[in-house]
Length: 254
Image 1 (cartoon, rainbow, N blue to C red):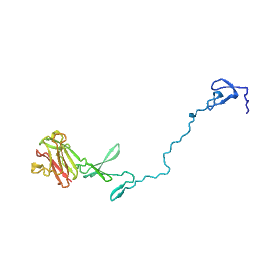
Image 2 (cartoon, one colour):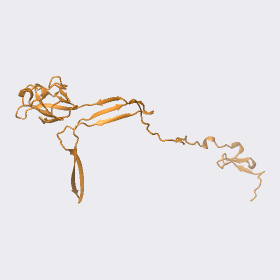
Image 3 (cartoon, helix red, strand yellow):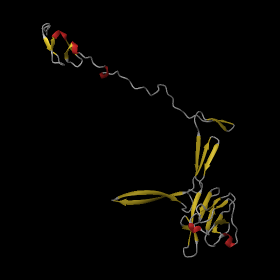
Image 4 (spheres, rainbow, N blue to C red):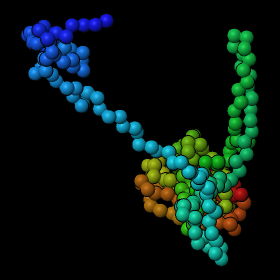
């Protein structure tokens, strides 16, 4: 289809609404027909260049295998450029557990519930010893076990209560540390000692002192009697009051 040249024609600008010679009209990027004096090119920011994201992955990769340390005369000479640490968690004592299953029926559905419990609940299985080996340096953290000692009269004279249990029979392991904390005010005048004889000096025995430390005054905060059980310790020890008879209990050594 042919059109007139428009040499003598007028055109109305889409921007100003004024009439201009048809031959002087131009079309903008928006499609608007404007006079050449009104023409505005497209702003560069309206059409920004495309930028790809920076690459992260590597083309030729290899998995990093742990290089075993190099030993020279039994000493670690190189860890292969990586730090090497060996942590061994040991749990001293008898940690035998049994599994008990219980069946529960509800709305016609029977469910089996299993639980674990110590085979011997009397065993003191609360100690945790951490042995940390970094190269040739070994660090051992052994907080030991602490017993809260109080004194009360159940009607038959004063008795020691260990963690709330009257004259509790305790189980110690050779090489481990144990502390009888006597900071409670009820301990005033009842210094706790250890002996190889039941009731200690009240039964003709003597105080056992191997690995034993006595600190402070009973009944005053910070007072305690502690023992690190020596490898030569007998199979049975006894804790007793240095002043009053019949207050203590037995300690089994393994």
